[in-house]
Image 1: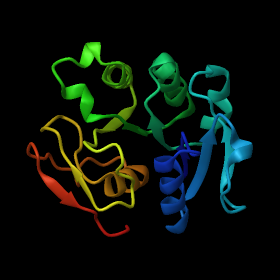
Image 2: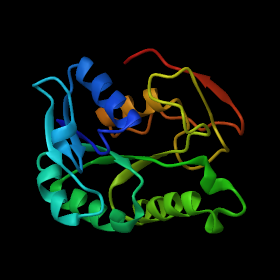
Image 3: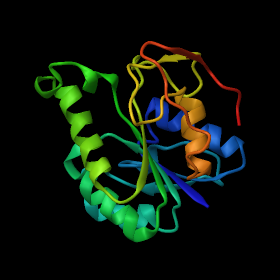
Length: 187
């Protein structure tokens, strides 16, 4: 089982790579600039530029789960390639801004909404994370759920790590609007 984390150079992606690695899981750190990544030697790094579909096949080779940063320009191509590679589950980091009434006019909300729609239209099982606070990271304390949705609402740390390890929907639950969740213990 290999887990691809896209956007591994960023705050959320790098924290998630570290968490998964500490749990003893095989993780592949994907970035448009993999030479800039500084992870332990047993963390594989790969070029995965979400705006360049030619980088997808090598990044997805032998991958079972993906943590995907919302880049709408080629989400449909990424999902298609992930399906062809045998990926069983994709976790998308989105934004609660997609829930606003002006989402179509808000560039950030619109880009996340497009990525969510492309993922929903694809054949791969998916979990969409919509944290309310953009500064929240997988190791932060609290994440507030924007509204109930057919997506999983939990702390990103718990959702991302559990979602990377299983495709079972049995442990997931829906949230109420505005519900706070304390960070779950490391799995």
